[in-house]
Image (tube, rainbow, N blue to C red; front, side, top):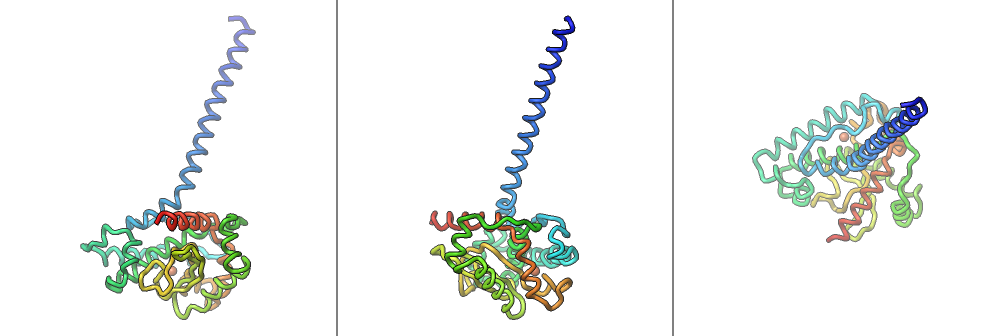
Length: 255
Ligand SMILES: [Fe+2]
């Protein structure tokens, strides 16, 4: 092989290797995106299998709005205790193989330990998935339109949701949900109740949750619940909330 032919051969080989590497990396990226996109869905689906999901980010990921120590204690102690107590409460019963949403539909028929701990288990996972490190991402256009149509403006929605959290007496949660007709509403539940439970006065499919138990904020914000609620808006995972809205509408359409 003369020098010219050797050079051409090397260039062609180099191009083939580049193409192979590029395609492999592109496929890896595509696969990772698919995994990331489906993670939340899998995590929420895992609730029906009574799985204790890992926190979807590091303990310090939501700093400075939610501090590392609070996050670590909240997840590894409080949430884990609800989960363990829930598993103990349903041991040897029909509930072991039931979807948690089915348990909620009949929660009034079960012991109070099931009500408190199934709620504590579900609500916290829902809460974790609804947050992410600070980003400027806003709700998608469909969700924004529904929010502004319902509450007159996005700021008014935030005001009413924050108020629901601030005025919850004692411990509980603030929720944005849609009812069976697809209408959006803000509601607050006591203790570990949620709008999926049959005992809830206002029932619906939750889209966004905020934990206003003191254990969620006391280390950093002491008694200033309002400051904690204001900080929460910096870490809402609007992409996830938008997806929940789309899924909720689909589930209503398929009835
Ligand atoms: Fe909590």
